[in-house]
Image 1 (cartoon, one colour):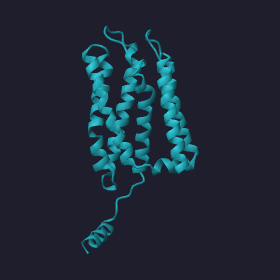
Image 2 (cartoon, helix red, strand yellow; image 1 turned 180 degrees about the vertical axis):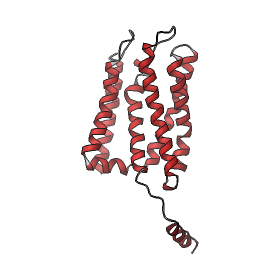
Image 3 (cartoon, helix red, strand yellow; image 1 turned 30 degrees about the horizontal axis):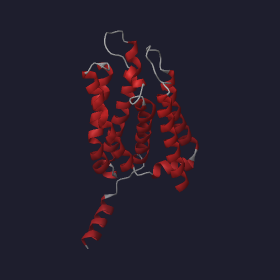
Image 4 (spheres, helix red, strand yellow; image 1 turned 120 degrees about the vertical axis):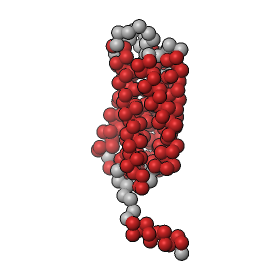
Length: 210
């Protein structure tokens, strides 16, 4: 497990460096509102590799399921920075169709992540924990869908160009797929939780009282 931890940490670091370097080299720029193939590849390949690895490697599955779900969930607090989308929309720098939905969705997930990590990440609240994680995935998928289709909506106003250059380009090419992976792992972990039986809970309570 220690080797896997070092490997995964190294892969995530390398992925971040790639996304940052490619953005600095303007490989994701989309000033002409074309289909963002480069962004799609940068975001999609790691996600596909993650699911493939999860499917074929028992060791990787065991490692993924051993990660503390509270830690994975707490990392989602960073999504409160979705407020930037709302601010940029107010400045008419991002289309409202994308920015308001993605922004307020991220704000909600980011603002409630601490509560989900500390209060819901337990067998007794398994259903609510899975629901919260699912809402986080829906928010990410919705944001990506609205971002991709925004360029095809022929309406006057700002474009999605800012999302293809630094620093915002790191969101679709690194943060969104990473947070998606965190959600998937957390749901996989929670699906294996089993609430203790009333008799066991009573026995535990009695031992504490004693």
